[in-house]
Length: 482
Ligand SMILES: Cc1ncc(COP(=O)(O)O)c(C=O)c1O
Image (cartoon, rainbow, N blue to C red; front, side, top):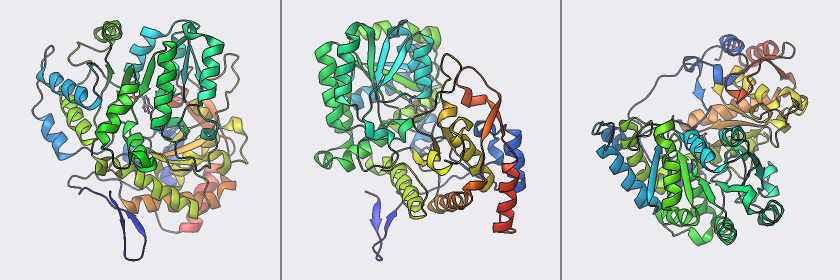
């Protein structure tokens, strides 16, 4: 493992790769950052990449690829039907997951569309540890609803529970008794549950959920988009799996599931997605929708070059040194922030560091988008782009009132193998500065609010002139520094 101890006793999250292709980034003066944020309607999704110093919006489609992935892209077989590339990818996935069929799709939400269209009916309920934005949108569009049955500890930002993504088994049994199996479209386990801070699900929990679902004849679906992180945590946090190979862990997880789907923008450091299933009848049901929404069955809306990159990336995901880089950097960033008194989700999860904006900005009313305001402040204060994962990312209730999120988080994603440790340290420094000046941060309100997935392209404005005051304070404290 790449966590190496120095002579001083300090643990260093050491990179087990070298960087041989780089992209220039710009750090604009604070006045320009303020202007960019105003032009982006205080929504970090609407910023332009050229204005961003460190893009920690997401790990989706922006993980660094390996030289072997790039090399594989050069030998892609570009044919509409029957492409060799498809068969190569299919056999890698069959080998890794031990599942029989693979349906390609252009990204994770496309898989969710196919699964929701196939299994969700008006009035049906999907049980899950926790929702993801696009998952919930696809289920509700079909007239279904989501019921979250994650362990209570998951919603406490500060905890030492190693597997906070676990399903609460009592609540699962209770939901099955209350709803009856006919009403339950399927049970969904999200690996390294994104919106609660990339928190993993334990093997024991998956095994038990699978046993219960099989006993009741309920379909079990795994969203494996963040599986790489979950695999790392099973290996490092569960004594029983310390010496078990990553591929064996993957196979065991897959053996519990009826359907596994993933966004390859996350899993495998490529772009694209896919669904794995062993049962022939389930495969045939979903297969009909692939040509309708995605493309022919041997490309599913993906470029063949991406499919080659995915095949290599999936094999590389079975390497602990490759998948450990993000979690150990996340842990380093979280620990650095904790020493500076900044509230973050603990234990550190995968994907990124999650700052508890609810606590950070508790002086802002909760309807004024605390995490959204902190994301805007983070860009003004440091040129770092994070993502709001809180009330702004929720859909309003049917009566138009705000649905206040369970957790108000600013996610600082660390895409795989993209940032250096000094960039991580810089980020911690600027958050610590913001924390010291948090009283200057104010709320936001919508100016333009889309009905569906409003966080993507909604525009907001600050309540008061706090962004200008924040920029002025930055100048005062940092002088000529960028
Ligand atoms: C857990 C989870 N599921 C599904 C998706 C959707 O994947 P995509 O962005 O490829 O559509 C994501 C993307 O971030 C995700 O994190």
